[in-house]
Every structure is written in C-alpha cells, then in structure tokens.
Image 1 (tube, rainbow over the protein chains, first blue to last red):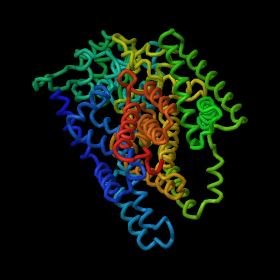
Image 2 (image 1 turned 135 degrees about the vertical axis):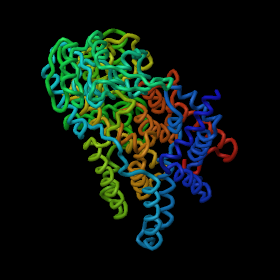
Image 3 (image 1 turned 180 degrees about the vertical axis):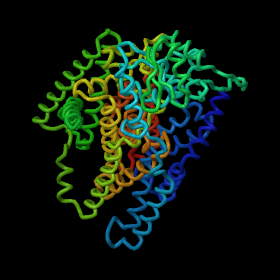
Image 4 (image 1 turned 180 degrees about the horizontal axis):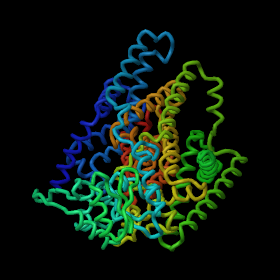
Length: 281
Length: 329
C-alpha cells in the first residue's frame, strides 16, 4: 500500500510536469463553479469535481489504481475525469458570454477573449511536440526496411536473425516471417507485461554486446551491481549460434577481419549490406 | 484502404440503426441521432469481433475462420440494420443535422467550417503517419503474427518463436488484435495500414461523435454553443498531443489502443448516455470496454463512471430539488 501511495504521489507530479492542460482544466472547473454555469448540468459537474479530487488525493488515487488493476500506471486513473469535455464546456460558456450569444455585436469583447483563450490552450498544450518518428515511411523506418529487405532476400525459410536494435525495432512489423533472437521487448520493458515469457541473462548480454560493440569486437558493459564487464564478440557469436541464429547483422564499425572471424565461428560467410555486415550460415 | 474506410462509415451506421430499433422498438427515441447510431454500431462491431475471437481462443479455430465468421456476421447485421432503416426509425438520423445545416445561422456555419478544418488537419496528420507511437504496444506485430501463422497467440509477436510461458488469458480474450487482423484479411491490407491509419481514423470519428453527443446534452438545441464546444474540443485534441495519457495524444498518436478507444469514445459516450438516462446503451459501453481493455473482471472505467454519475444524481436529487430533476433535464 505504501508503494501504491508513493506511486500515486509521484504520478501526480509527473502528470502536472509534462504539460499544463491539467491546470487549464482546474481553472475551467473553478470558472464553471464561480460563474454558476455548472447548474445546467450539476450532476456532470459534481461528478467531474469529485473524480478530480479522488485522482489528486493520494489515498483515493491509490484505491482507483487498485480498481483499474496494476496493469496500468497512475496517469490512467485520469480516464475517469472528462478533462477535455469539461475544459471545452467551460470555454464554450466563456465565449458565449463574451460574444453575447455569438453575435457580431459581441465582437469588441469576444475577439480579445477568444484570442486569449486560444493562446492559453496553445501555451498549456504541446502542439507540434513530436520527439519520435515510428512511421514505416519515416527516416529510420524506411532505412530499416531497406536493410531488412536485403537481409530477407538472402535468408532461407526458418532463418533466425540477430541484429542491432534499430533494425529489430521494425523487423517483425515489416515481415512477420522473420524470426528474431530477441525482439523489441528487450529494451521496451513495458511490452513484457503482455506475456509470461522472459529473456535469460545470456540473451540480455548478447543485446548489450550488439548495442555497445566497438571496432575490436568487444563491449564494455556495467552489470546490475555497477561493476564493469567486458563482453567478447567470439563468445557472443558462439552463444548466438548455439541458440539457433542463422543470420547476424553487425554494425560496420567492427573491423572486417573480425567480421570474417565471426562468420567462420557461425559457419558461414560475411557480406556487406548497406552499412552492416551480414553473416549467414 | 478507401473501401475499408467506406465500410467503417456505413456498416456501423446500418448496424447501429438496427440495434437502436431492437432496443427501443416503437418508442421513438427523439434524442438519438446519426452519431448515436454510428457509435452503437461500432460497439456492436466490437461485440461481433469478440464473439469470433472467443471462438478462436477457446474452440481452436484458425484465424482465417475467425475473420470469415466476423465478416459474415458483420455483413448480415449491416444488411439487417439497413432493412430496419425502411421502417419507422428509432432515432432522428441525419435529417435534423442536414436541416440545421441548411437553415443554420452564419455563425453556426462558420463554427462548423472551423471544426471541419481542424478535423481535416487531424485526418491528414494521422494519415501522414508522423505521430505513430508504439512504445509499450505491439498490436501491429501481433496482427502480423496472427495473419502469418493463421493462429492466435501461437508465437511470440516480438520474436516469431513459439511461446514458452504464453499470454495471460485476460489479455488473450481481448478482441482488438483479432478485429484488426480480420480487417486486414477481408480487405487485403497490411497490418501497418489498418492498425496505424484506418483504425485511428475510426477512433477520431468515434471520439467526435461521442463529444457531439455530450455537447448535445450540455447545450441542448443551442447549435452555436454545440459547434463552439466541438471546435474547442478539436483544439484541445491538438493541444493535448504532449503526453501519453492525454486524449489528444491518444487520438492522434495511438488511436488503435484499447485504452484510447475507451477514453476518447466509450467514456464520453457513456457520460452522454447517463446524462440522457439511456441505460441500455450504457451497458453496451461497459461490455465493449471489457472486450477491448484490461479491466477488473469486466469492471472498468465506463462502469465506474456510470455508477458514480448515477450516485451523484441520486444524492443531488435527494439533497436539493423537490421534483428531483436537474435544470436542463
């Protein structure tokens, strides 16, 4: 319960840090209340105010978190609060009052208030705030698809691929016939909530090696205790081969001799594919 | 894709019309419009998809069979709903909206135009694929796995390898991946097109239908206020694109997720139905949520919202008004 309460408190801070539409929503509630506009739909207003208090107050927030199951984080209890609808309701009442029923006669007061409201909405929100591009047509997606196409054209049925995260991110969505040593859930931990399956430490090490490997084929990683560990390419390729990997895509920062050496360990050959070495059994 | 979008508009509209006829029979429900019919139709489609998906999960059907059963059932229901349209209607349909549009004041038309521009910009944004947010979500991979293996949850969508521990049953029974997969199979489309483009468009439309119903409850027949409400809602959707839990982010960046459909379509619609005291469709919303999102054994946000609103209404009636009615009811 203590953990749940702590999560509820931290969640509220996170909720208000990201953007300020929550503040605009609280101002809307206040406006509807003080302006007496809530009376037309009193039950809706009281319900919204009540759920807002429940979401902010840690004890009731923790209870709501229990109700929505631990599958979801704190922020999702705000699903019970019709924020968008109530903010738009208050905005409509405000504009209606200032425009005197949306008439041209209300232009003098209505226009500045409309501009102010618009500015408030835009300043409180995050229009144009992307910060990610996961589309298949996006730069990263398109490049990964090109590489994957080159790889899959050389693969046989039943092949298993081990590649850097930027390729694996798109692999299964681009081609469901591609089997992977590990998938996106290796680094996107939230995805593990959908299955009972977990990755053994051995595969985690392979992931760390692939993402951190230098030109000599070694990767320095830090373990859970904070101690540094060196992962050697030869060992990792052997483990991968034992796990059934038939194709390995390596970043081309690795020396070509090393790539040849790893191809020999895998029992195949090495070819260059669009900025990577493809080792195939 | 165009055919799928056309079907996503017409099929729920026909089914919804039929379902409203069944629920309300000869009692003409004057406060039900085309938006209601479409939303009820969407909920019915979710119900059909759930039934087909359960057949797949528990009876060991192949995924092709699930898709076929879903396609036939949805088609039959749509035809039945279409036939019901020739009888006296349960709701108002598009008539009043078109009449209002023709007779509407200049201000109403301006607001409607503004709303249309905002929605159009959001449609373009969704179709551009610039805002697709997949962290913590594997719907596209899951749908791809269903289609490739012709089985549900046989292989791990993340790797393509056989499951060892498997998937929790309460996730397995959720129907959205099955529904999206069935649409891919029926319309010969790629999972990415259906999951990341077509479905978010349906969620966008469903969200605005639900907000439109809510607006009608809040402002009754005041068209100017209702359109202003929709314009502000559309603006807030754009502005709310900054965080995962905001309605705007959900609609514009991850409209295929169950929680997003719940938050932006089912919950606002359930609120509008509660305010109108239309309890049977509220039950449908609660059931639909249980089919698409992880709930506490079926008890989700729609149920909590409906019960809370009912309780608040009851307490307010007891405490205040002698005749037990709200001012706008």
